[in-house]
Image (cartoon, rainbow, N blue to C red):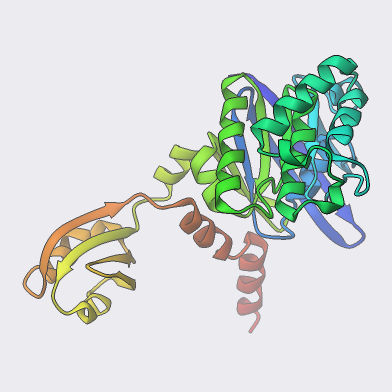
Length: 314
């Protein structure tokens, strides 16, 4: 699948802070791609450079094979994490205004505005000023603005921020509809459930460095099955005492056990069998949340090297 967005060796520094370090990315056309990482990891900086709001200190960014910026801006729509709506302007008038900025003819801008107000369950608020809307409604309104120009690429920074579970699900449904229509969607988030449910591929970054990326199923498979789900009857306290178990999380009549070495799972089962009544035992594919925690918790290579050098001179 060809790349809609490509980054090669992209770096960005703010003073003495390296916000992004030699980032390489290929975002397939027609996919939903998640840029994941903790706060301050470089996600927003990456999105702003793709949209040419910021320029990289080094490296190259291309959109469908052409340099970012210039005419490529017409292919993109960007929803920033910070709200950029006019608070005293009426909602429907504002959406038409933003559509017109994207060169959408007035009649079509009004039609699209009506459609997205209905689809996002905001039609009853069309004549209200933006500052009269709740935080969640304002977020949906800003999402509508990103959709009005019918862009080939949607770039969204924390798109479900401020939304309750029902509206977050509505936004996820619309993103999948956009993918089905052939759009490319790049969004940043630190909410792993968003990425888990809709992403085709992900990139995990921390401290400005890519830690892993790729097809989401391959990423999960590559992380290994380090958790066992055990359904049982008996003394739950024995689970944390089992050999090779680093953590036991209890959930009523079952537990999830974090394993030090998944290859020794048969040995664990043999140890448990005479002590508990085991009704089910399986190794689970890791969740993105667990992969995120495990990966981000690992020290950066520079820190490991520095620690080794320090120890050698101790």
